[in-house]
Image (tube, rainbow, N blue to C red; front, side, top):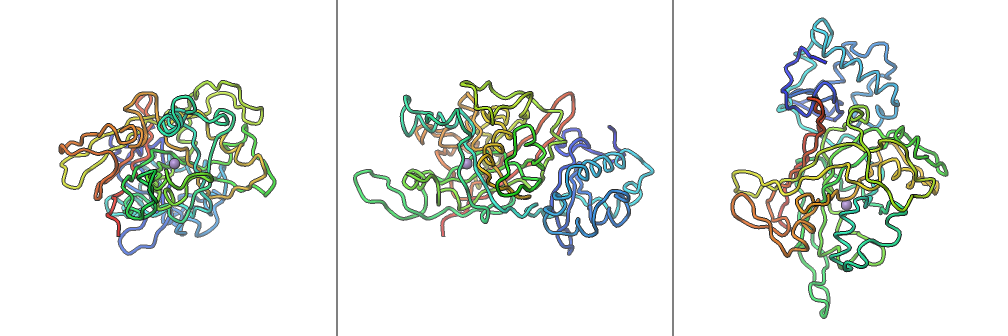
Length: 413
Ligand code: MN
């Protein structure tokens, strides 16, 4: 596909992508948009100009400050909109071409907002390498993976209220930890703030309480994916997590990238996940290529450094459990899901030390510091560091990317 619009060759937002977000510019209220090259298509205005005439979209859906109502319209509508935008971006006689001054907003003039109202948030733990690394550090080589791990996609319920958009600073949390096992716990700022490299999917369709989503239909319930930094305070986590799992060590903030990349955009990057052995129970079985080849990286930009340092390169396809399995498991007991719910993958680590998705693993529990481009070292995230995550797919010269999620860590208050 060739567009009349000048789209940089290395842009994450090619004509094959067309991810959705919520943006504002000038004095305008937040509205729905689609990213293309260095521009955002203003869907509210495009609708008014008749770009989507004859597609069944109720009035004002694109005027809302979140995408939930649009997502609820369903995949046939999303696909029709995608096709229409691709046609108009190629056709130099289209409405989009004629009204480009009004309909295309330069990205640098826009502010991005949280794209959906997130009802519930679940965090999985689906990377075998991550679970094994953490297990080795905390329980030793012999008990690294728990007996349940290869039979079910382990997860916990997180907190939706503290999920923020890229660019929103996170403050170092206060809390309890127990640095010395022979002394009582202490209270103070966390001394081990960490990132977790994750990808999250956003639910695109409601279910009823009591209903199950089988693996073969699970993708019908997924609208799209975002990058997800699940901020973690390791010292707080270590002390609080027994027996119910993480709580305050996780819920002080998680950051997402602003553009939701749809499953349709990711279709050409489908690939096979790892072989699952022992075989999974029938309700978790999937066939074919059920994951995606998404290249991921994490960089740290210290306050006065001239350039960032890439500390991790990983890939979404390394995950042991795929999204269909996660969703089938999540609903197998009848738990209902709602449009806008967010389900994160868990830290995505690969098998080599440079592919580990957290500082906990990269520094092997703070034993091996990482050197930054300015010569300073890290075993955790410092105050005023910016953590940047990026992700993209690329094949046969076609690129579909997520942009980035970047977050400044502020000192404790
Ligand atoms: Mn996590």
